[in-house]
Amino acid sequence: MKSIENTNFNGRKVLLRVDFNVPVDENKHVTDDTRIVEAMPTINKLLKDGAAVIIMAHFGRPKKGGFEPEFTLQPVAKRFEELLGKPVLFTQQLLGSGVPEQMARDLKSGQVMLLENIRFYPEETKGGEDLARQLAALGDCYVNDAFGAAHREHSSTAVIAKFFPNDKYFGFLMEHEVTNLEKLMHNAPRPFTAIIGGSKVSSKIGILESMMNKVDNIVIIGGMRYTFTKALGGKIGNSICEDDKLDLARDLMRRMDEKGVKYYLPVDSVIGDKFSNDANTQIVPSGEVPDGWESMDCGPESCRAIRDIIMNSKTILWNGPAGVFEIPAFAKGTSEIATYVAEACKQGAYAAVGGGDSVAAVKQMGFANQMSYVSTGGGAMLEYLEGKVLPGIKAIQD
Ligand code: ADP
Ligand code: MG
Image (cartoon, rainbow, N blue to C red; front, side, top):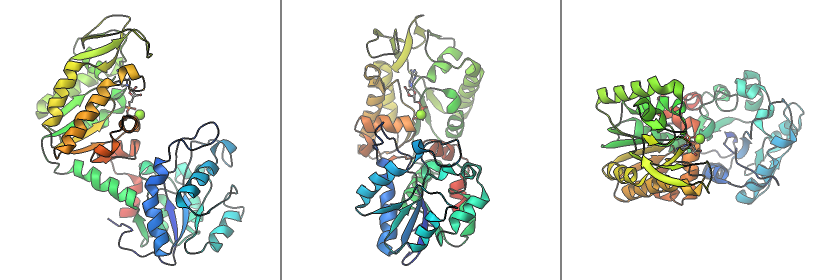
């Protein structure tokens, strides 16, 4: 792996791609700066070496082409400056105006500049080579630390790398992600359990198919398990279900059986008569949800069974909440599972948690630092575990 670790960047102008796509509130204050914080080790290493650092990042999904006030990186620049403890050079002027170009030329060792939202250039998401060339001209080497965008073949995440055939590197965050994901992909200590949940089977087909070739157990939780329950003839009331995926669910279960992978579907469910915290609730067997009721979480008996599976595992991958954890009344299953996974880690198991909502849940419940590894990439992590080649990673390795 071409890491920045063993390279000295003294006197160099480094083009660094990061994932600064953070949430902001209506007053344009960054509400969660995790992604900025996580890029700091790489930035600090480059600055300590004596590099000048030119940062490329995207923010939201601007569509118009050109500057849009709603999507400016200005609020991010402000928070970044606070974390860095020194000025960040930033301009809302775009490339071609000459302003960022001049700023880059004048940039000195130890200085940092941030380019305005890279998605203001419509070419970026198309992987345009002209934009990549324009960006490449600003610096003399390329470091990619944007794992969250590594599954995209964009100008700043992948295409730009070709202009630095001998001078392209992974940042620390990227390296950490790849090292950890590789642990799950190859020779993970057994028993290996994948806990897969979330709202839709359709978004988890790839990871289920990939994991069934690697693991001993698959625990299927969240809303998506109701497609499986219905496929098995259960009554699911108003629970979330993808009716066009019933055959697929049957096929997945058949293939897991064939491969000798044990899959577990929760036996009981917490159901509600509406999708809110003041819903009436009851606990019923999973395949016996009455009409007018909707399953929102897994029940206590299921939690006990899942605990046994987790405590008997040496490797655990968890993606997808067990229930509608955003509503406190239905967060129990997810918080229980977080407790068990943390317990397993204390006993020496290796556990990885990934997925936008899963990571949010684990953080909100205070378990993030008790897991072996929490991925910063949602889609990127899923695609990696599906066995796909991520363009942002390949571009550095080629
Ligand atoms: P991740 O982002 O971690 O990959 P997903 O996006 O697949 O996870 O799924 C997260 C969503 O699944 C959450 O918003 C949660 O409310 C929802 N969910 C979990 N269980 C249920 C359920 N029983 N009914 C409806 N939605 C559910
Ligand atoms: Mg999600």
